[in-house]
Length: 141
Image (cartoon, rainbow, N blue to C red):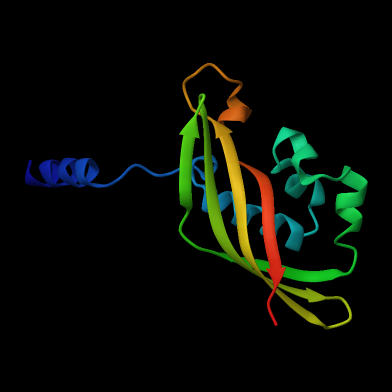
């Protein structure tokens, strides 16, 4: 009986697991993981409006990574959360480290702005997930 109560207490005290689409940091991390494994379609679709928010066609997007051998991102805590008109916005700080196929290394710092429609308003399910909306990255020397 005590074990059952203890398990129930832990379940009540433990926060619910956060799905990737509910965690903007995980969206940015998933974006770079997809790029690193060469799954450019998955990376492209993490941009808002089925990739259109990237400002590039899928072909131009994919070709932009032709010289990239490895990439990884270190994300910070989301900031500037804003909501209005049934939409939500948040900025995710990021340090991006890339190694080119020629061995040169690149380092960028900045943030990604993510967007979604507020859950529960009747928007399509995919629109309620966080998507990349814009990027502000600068080279670090």
